[in-house]
Amino acid sequence: MLDVRALVFTADMYGLQLDQLAELFGGGTLRQARALVARWAKAGLAESASLSPGSPWVWITKAGLQACGVRYSAAPPALARLAHIRAVTAVRLALQAVPAYRDAGAYWRSERRLRARLGGRLGSRDHLPDAEVHWPDGTGVSWAGECWAIEAERTAKTLARTTAIMRELLARTGDYGCPAADARVPGLPPRHARVLYLCSPAAAGTVLRARETLGSLGARIDVRMLPPSAEMPPAQPLAGTGP
Image (cartoon, rainbow, N blue to C red; front, side, top):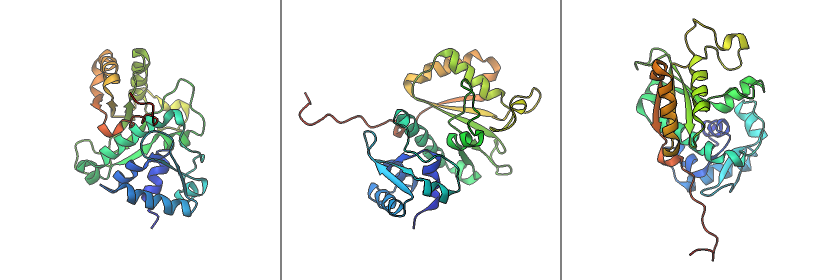
């Protein structure tokens, strides 16, 4: 079994490490994750390599992306973004483990999926959230029908840039990929009922100060700490170079 759900999850996240793939299966082992990746690789759907400290990374090939029905460019995850990708994946896994998320049928719309909708039309100073979480109507939770923007903040941006991003996310009315005139229309309901920031200790202070500058708008921003699994494992010293 090639498990299409896990294949699409991996494609949406640009790639992920094997320990996170194991977590996707609710407590699966690294051995099981390796076996799954081996089946994917044998079918030409995925590749795997050690790109960073910790367990190997896996990403989806062109054939695998076609099998998923998504129009992404086939490439390994960018080395400069590995730590961020791991953090965002940890947030997604943590949310999907919450009973209310599962029971409500909430779904994650990844940054990669949003970027594909834009088709390269993102301005140099525009900002895409790391994901959106959609809560379907009629599911019994008080926030049913809402769309949340998700931000995983590992390192602190400047206060001015963080505040500008918050204002942009809170003011948006249109979907990503809509005509520019529909992106922010005064009087229409905001697209993002809430912005959920998941922060490292290093970034939390700036995010909290930026929220304070927004006044009453800041009530729509929640700030939480990143899950412990968001941290990239530390690099191991080379043999013979220790103290």
